[in-house]
Image 1: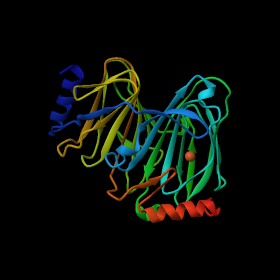
Image 2: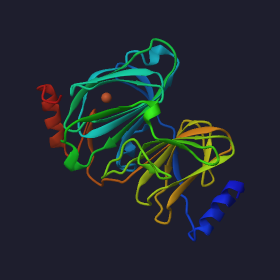
Image 3: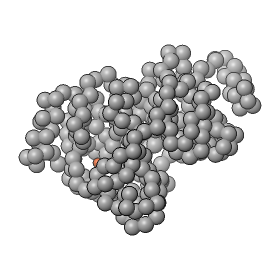
Image 4: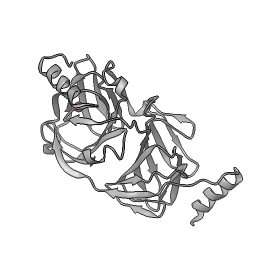
Length: 297
Ligand code: FE2
């Protein structure tokens, strides 16, 4: 045990309860691919992991200093049946959709879009040079909400709830709650937790996590350690579901930045066809014919 672990352990004991941290089940490197009109990205959470990480359907990481990798963006395309959460670390992207929403997403901002029964939208870079870096997460909707009304919100970096721990760890609470700080968005059924955690060297961070929730950590700067497993940069650590575990402890020897994402699994059938994620094949055929006939947006 290092000093912080002993400290955390002593705090647990003082409170009369013994905490148990999640361990790492496996590390995932992701798959290099491209989407939209040729945007280069790494698909970290791929279709094969949708059951394991239910209610999350996809996590893409994009980051490049070469405009050729991102300039064409994502021209008009449809979605139905889930939510997209875009977190822009660096860069500027303009969003427009068929529900009449328009917004500029930039440096540290989040765009949360609930596609529901359907939107057609575009996501186009507003820069011709410089770095474009960020993430897009897909969060499933429960069966009874898949055909609900579309919803959309932009949060500028300054609007996102944020706090700093005594050790100097900076936490941005995009969804859910952390240390009593409520996130920008909450969802009753999937209860998503989405934290961006900046750890200085030789610090640690603890977050309560319900045992039944599926959870993962993505390291985008530096390296961290979770229950003795080193998690290097650009790796996702899938956290084991352990009935005894009530938290996660993340330790950093060097400065590190990680995303911690968790949620309550829906345990419903997942049928994906491109930008449509429904519960049955029949619903996918309906989505395709609604899109073809212009009834989607
Ligand atoms: Fe999209």
